[in-house]
Structures are given as structure tokens and as C-alpha cells.
Image 1 (cartoon, rainbow, N blue to C red):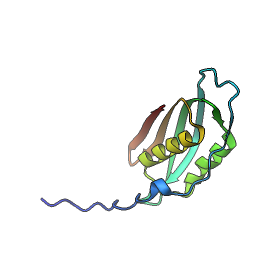
Image 2: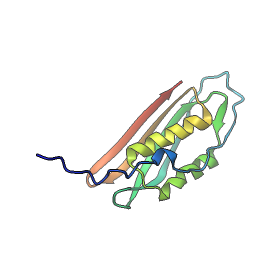
Image 3: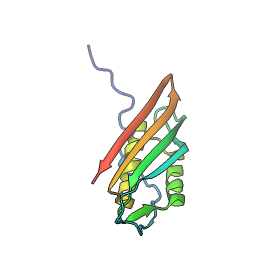
Image 4: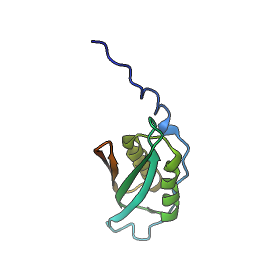
Amino acid sequence: MRKKKSSYRGLQENIRKSKLPGIETWENKYKDKNYTVHLETSEFTCICPKTGLGDFATLYLDYIPDKLCVELKSFKLYLHSFRDLGIFHEHAANRILDDFVHASKPRWARLRAEFNLRGGIKTTVEREYTR
């Protein structure tokens, strides 16, 4: 039996290089302390690269800051930039955590992205970063 050629081939070829707004930070005056910051939004949206339909998710991001904390308005604008981006759920979660870590250089971070039901299947993607 021959393998069926995937119609998803090439859809995410340059997803790691997609231009997105930067995430701003500010100086943590309590860098000598270990504390956890919890961020949550139920307003995350992106586009399915295959169908062009909207995908919706709740994001839960926890992090232990080091020298920097994330400026929330810039993070919100960063997340809103996904609204017009065709991206798979798995890639969205990985890209968000990569960009978050790059900007804020936390001691530890974890992202859980819970996508709404699509075709009867709910997708949850989790990733953790430890320095």
C-alpha cells in the first residue's frame, strides 16, 4: 500500500521565522526571591493553516522571574498578533513559550494551551522550560 501524500506538507515551513511583535520587559526589583507569576487569557485566537478557520484557546502561563518581568500590555499585543497567523496548535504553544523565554529569561516557565473543541477533539499542548 502506498502512503498518501500529506496535504499539510509545507504549511508550516517558516513558522519559526514569522514576524511577530516583541515582548517588552521591566526590571524585577525582587530578583533575590523565588515567586511565581500566573498569567491567563481565554482570548487567544489563531488560524488553522489548513482550513483558514479560527482556532480559540485558553492559555495558562506560569513563570518564575529572574532579572526581568514581562510587561503585560506588550504580551497581550503579542498574543493578539496570532489572530491572522495560520499555525498548528503545537507550533503556537512552542512559539509562544520560545518568544516568552527569549524576552524575559525566566528561571522557569510552563505554558498550557487548551484549544476549544474542533471536530469533536480538544487539544491541550503543554511545555515547560527550565534554565
